[in-house]
Structures are given as C-alpha cells and as structure tokens.
Amino acid sequence: TVTCSVDYTGPYGVIMPQFETSRKAFFAWWNETKGKELGINVKVKAYDMRYDPSVVASTWPGILTGDKPIAHMGLGGPDVAALMKRLPKDKVPMIMSTATYGFIWVPNQWVFQPRPTYAHEAAGFFNWVHQNKIKDRPIKIGAINSKVSPAYVDMINGIESFCKATPWAECVGTEWVQMKPVSLVSEVRRLSRKKPDYIWISSNTTHMIGAIKAQKELGIHIPLLGATHDGLQMSAWASKDINLLEGHYDSGAVDPAVDLNVPGARIYAEYCKKLGMETAWNVVAVQAAIMELLTLRAVERAAEAVGPENITGEAMYNAMYTGPFTEEELLGLAPTLTFTKDAPFSTKDLKVKATTVKNGKHMLVSDAWIDVPPIPSWVKK
Image (cartoon, rainbow, N blue to C red; front, side, top):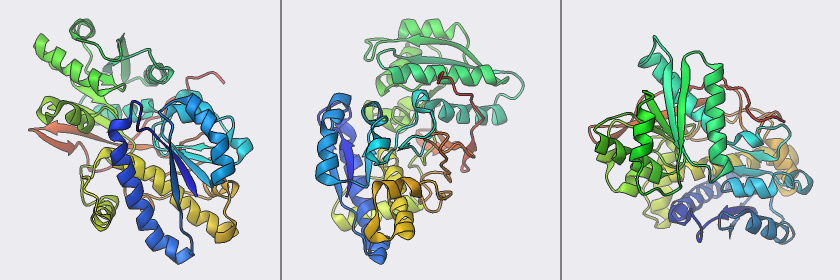
C-alpha cells in the first residue's frame, strides 16, 4: 500500500480531479505491466488532508498503524511541515511533486522531490534568456509575490541568492501583494519604473492574470514568468482566455504537457480510454505522474534488492539512492534524476523546460531541456 495526501475541501480542490485521473492511469498501467511481471499489486489509499499541516499531523499515526504504507505521496508544504522530522523515525519515505523550498534543502531527508526549488526552475529560464535573448548585459528581474506564506517568501529569497551569485542576473525589486488583490495597477506601475526585463510570479494565477490586466491598463508589456502551478496552462484555465497570456512564459523541471507524443502522455491517453476517463493531458497530470512514477520505479528497485514480499518503507528509502532514475524510466516527464543524501532533490545536471504563448498557441521555447545554473543555498542551517 502507498498512501497519498489529497485536498478536495481546501485550496487545491479544483485540481484534484486531474490528480486523481493521473493516479488511476499510471498505477493501473504499472500494475498491469511491471507489477504483473514482479507479482506485485500496488494499492493507493488517499486521505483528504485539506492542505492543512494540523490535519496531516493528526491523520498520520492512523495511517502508519492502519495502512503500514511503504511510501506516502505528499501534496505540498503542509505535508513537509507536519512530517519531515517524523519520517526518519517512522521509516516511511515521502515522495511529492511540488518544487522544493529552501528550508528543506538540508541533508538526510526522507522527503524526495523530483523538482529542485522554484528559484532553480526560474533560473533555468533566465539561463535560456541569457543564451538566446539578452547576452550583453545583466537580465533585470522583478517579482510579484505575497508574504502570506513562508514558502512564497522563500521563493524570493532563492531568486535573490541566484542573482547575487550570477553576474548576468540582477534582481530589481519585489512587490508584495495580497493573495487576492482587487487590482495590481499601482504595484505593476511601481515595478515597471525599475525597468525589469521580466517579472517572476510564482504565487498564484490571480497574481498572473492581475499583472497582465494591469499592464494592459497601463499600456505596457513586460513578459511575466510563471511557475507550473500558476503558469500559462493554469492561468489560461483560470481566465478562460489563452490569448491573454500572449508573450508571457512559464518554466518548470517537468514536461509542460505541450507534446502529446511524450511516452508518458501516450500511456496516460491509453489508460484514460481503458478506464473510461476523459480528462485531457495537462500539467497537473504531469506533476502527479512524476511523483507516481518515482514511487513505482522505487518499488521495482526495492523488489530487486529485498524481494517482492519484503518491501518496506526502509527498502523504498534505500532504493532511491541506487542510481539515476533516467528520463526514459520517467517516461519523458522529467529529466534524469540522481538522488543523494545531501538534498531532497536531485542536484546533478538540473534541467527545465519553458513555454510561451505565441499567436494564441501554447508552445515550447526549446525542444531540449534547458540547463539550470548553480544557486547557493540561502537558508542558514
């Protein structure tokens, strides 16, 4: 049994159907193929944690005793806050698909994330800009974010650390705003006076859409860079108008669900049809899939090491360190990942993909994965 956190009653309820579809598709695919070959059937049991660390903390003891999971798939920051210090004692690894935060960038974690920090994901995009667009001077980076969450503040600390360590990148300022502001005209006007080449918004779709509308009201265009959770596809869903995103960007260490020929996309389509599910391929399904695939590939490695009948949480934990999880194993949905005990994410050969909207079409800026430049850790240990 693998358990997982979901959120049907909190802030992420709107995307849970896509998460659930991905989970059903990829676990059915694995159980019918590799699992059948190994004589293993992996069951998934979901718990609605409401994206609340207190709910995670209170539910976890019952999960441990009742389900005896070999791994837990987390949904985000509340799972980390509630469990990161418990997991080594409980000997259950947690695998989750969000990008990492600086405050968990410490060694000897039982948390595994296929993505680096949000700052790394943004830095990869700016590396592409440095190589292809602005080569002869520092790239000026502005930001819009909110102080309502420590994770949001951490993102800005990360991009500032990147700029301090990188001669071709400069942070020109951050506008701190409410989670759901009525208007961002004043903040965008103030930030535009600092002449940023790009504005990074890694908080939510309200801020992305609000910043675009503010620019239209001001008669300016400064390209925005979003993250996977508030980027072009998610903001197009929220606004119901992809044309609003024309000339803007997003970046993440996952496949952005633009190419339907990626192996993971083909398997998803096959099993959605087989299981009678109609959800289209999307970036939410991708984020869920890489967490699921990492978990299932670890099951394969644990079975090889200790035998299918002896798989425990500790065997799963050890399996994560047995060598690279290749892009092929991850069905093209993430670059090759190599975990060490130095960090909860793969720190070797970090790469991202970035997209834009051009002439109303959502498209990759580069077919190839883009290298991520180094960033010093910004949290004092």
